[in-house]
Amino acid sequence: KDKIINDPIYGFITIDKGIITKLIEHPYFQRLRRVSQLGLSYLVYPGAIHSRFHHAIGCMHLITKAIYQLRKKGHTISNEEAESLKIAILLHDIGHGPFSHALEHSIVTDISHEKLSYLFIEKLNKQFNGKLTLASKIFTNTHPKKFLHQLIDSQLDMDRLDYLKRDSFFSGVTEGNIGTERIINMLNVVNDELVVEEKGIYSIEKFLIARRLMYWQVYLHKTVVSAENMLINILKRAKLLIQNGTDIFTLPSLKIFLEKDISQSDFQKKSNFLDDFAELDDYDIYTCIKHWIKSEDFVLSFLSKRLINRKLLKIKVTKEPIPEEEKDKLTNNFIKKYKCSKEEAAFCIFSYKISNSTYNINKAKINILMKNGDVIDITSASDQFNIEALNKTVEKHFLCYTND
Image 1 (cartoon, rainbow, N blue to C red):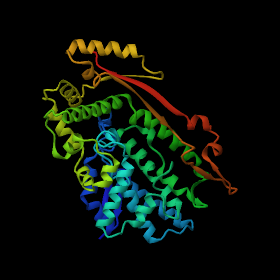
Image 2 (cartoon, rainbow, N blue to C red):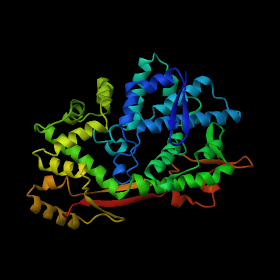
Image 3 (spheres, rainbow, N blue to C red):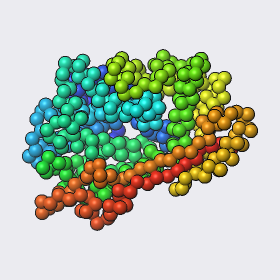
Image 4 (cartoon, rainbow, N blue to C red):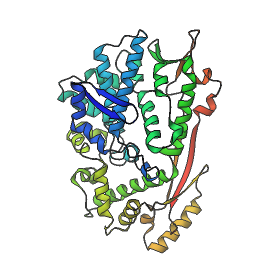
């Protein structure tokens, strides 16, 4: 029988029997239940405790609707392509590590979650005797029909449509609530390119505004930035201690990735690293952090205790780079108070930058199908936007510190 999942956003979602059900039941996919969708955002928005599992199922539901609409408009999507599309979107985030984006380049180096997802898809393809071959081609955009890949990865894909609506719902930030149904109903294909019919233009405008607001209100909220950088520094410190021969508590699943810098080439040389990575989830990280509160190492104990008890580092966000003398003054005060070294203080007083662009016209376009048959970019079709405002990368600088 087909299975049914009751989703808080869309209601009942039907899970096709066969390979899709088997993939969802696979330990690799079940791990996503234990990987938070929004990292440490729940420290600001207490309801934001949904998982990557939620998101992947929601994406599959939306792509099912998109397939129905495109077929209704006369575009050919075979049953095999439809199933492969569902598989590709279902597995698109399977390569995320603990706390999703927060630790993307901390546990493993120089490899993105997208690349890890592809390695997982390839490994699953072997386990399922080649049944994921077409899904892999769609995922990597090597399938002849390019619009199929655009449904999974573009500036108006099912991934973005789901995470904006879902993250808005669970965080309570209503500005992210977009009209996914209407956008999907307005989808069409022209010359193998995904387009949106002209009457859906206002829904696209809202989608772009919602994306911008969600980034600065939720994903890059200054308190979330402070918490996630504390988490990154905790793992950096743990890795430094272990690699220097200091004996600290750690779970076997995490120890593998702290003992050495595992890169993309390591994953490709030794497939066992994928299984090791698949053992990791948020719970492993938290278990270690709770132990590290009592660590003899000052930095590990200091940051772990503050993160667990939500006594986060203060954060100052500015448009201009943080003056070095300001950071130096805070660092010197911290060294005097805690009698630590400058190297140790650097884990607790630090400055970096964050950036985001709402719409990258150089990467891909959101094309609008006008009533006269012309296909033009959203920035030309809309009377609300100009390309400079949309395409501009907004960059902010921040300083994390403590003055208590």
